[in-house]
Length: 265
Ligand SMILES: Cc1cc2nc3c(=O)[nH]c(=O)nc-3n(C[C@H](O)[C@H](O)[C@H](O)COP(=O)(O)OP(=O)(O)OC[C@H]3O[C@@H](n4cnc5c(N)ncnc54)[C@H](O)[C@@H]3O)c2cc1C
Ligand code: FES
Image (tube, rainbow, N blue to C red; front, side, top):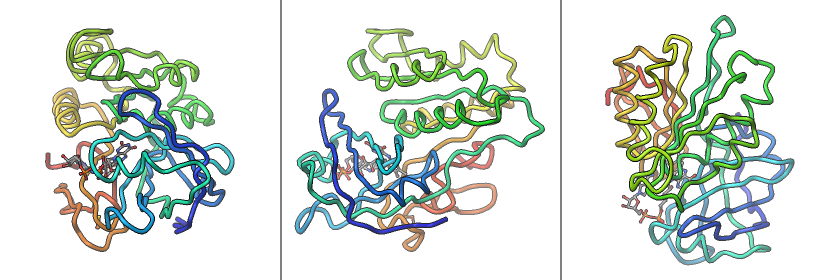
C-alpha cells in the first residue's frame, strides 16, 4: 500500500447541518490509492493548535478529490471547521485496512449498519459494492442508518441514489424506527437468511458492541470499523490497540476494519 504525506489543497470545507461538515481536498495519489474503510491523518491547524493529527475516514473519492465528513466535537475538529478553501492541509494516507469482500465462492447479501458519523466510510463501500463485478455481494444492499434525531440523519439520499434499500432509526422517534439502529436491524433479521448476510458496520462503540453480540448469537459474518483514540496513526505508538483472539492489534495498522468474530469485545 502506498502511503503519502502531502500538503493537500482544501477545495471545500462547509457545514452540511448542525455540527456536521464536509471537507473536500485535492490529492490525486491519495485518491487513487484509497480503499473504502481507510482513513487519513490530518494536521488540522497550521502552526498552532493540536499537536496530534486527527483521523478521518475517507467518505468518497472522485478523480483527484477526496471527501470527508466530520462532526465538530472538540478542539481539533473546531479548528478544522475554520479552515478555508484554498488553504493547504498536511495529510497522511491512505491508512489502515478497509472493508473486504467475502470469498468468491460465497453468495452473500450486504447489510450496512451506520451509527451517526459512521455513514462516512460506508457510502464509499456501498459505491464499490454497486460498481464491483461481484454482483453477489452488491445485488441487494440494505442500509440501516441510526441517528439521534431526524435532523442528524446523514447520507440517506446518497445511499438511495446508489439503489440501496435504506431503513432509518432515530433515538427520539422523529423519523423511522423509534430506538437504536441495532434494534431495527435485529427486528429485520427475523425475516432474513442470516447465513447469506455480511454486515459491514461503523459507528459508536456501544452500537458496535451490540452488533457483535447480535452477530455472535445469530452466527452472522460481520466486519466492523473501530474508532480508537490515535496518536501516530501509522502503527508506531501502540496507543490504539484492541484485544482480539489473535492477540492485541493496532486499530490504525491492522484495522480499523476487523472481523467481528475476532474481537474480544
Ligand atoms: C479510523 C478513524 C476514523 C474516523 N473517522 C471519522 C470521520 O469520518 N468523521 C468524524 O467526525 N470523526 C471520525 N473519527 C473520530 C475523529 O477522529 C474524532 O472525532 C476527532 O479526532 C476528535 O478530535 P477533536 O480534537 O475535535 O476532539 P477531542 O477533544 O479529541 O475529542 C472530543 C470527544 O470525542 C472523543 N473522541 C475523540 N476521538 C475519538 C476516537 N477516535 N474514538 C472515540 N472517541 C473519540 C473524546 O474522548 C472526547 O470525548 C474517526 C476516528 C478514527 C480512529
Ligand atoms: S495510533 Fe499509534 S499505533 Fe495506532
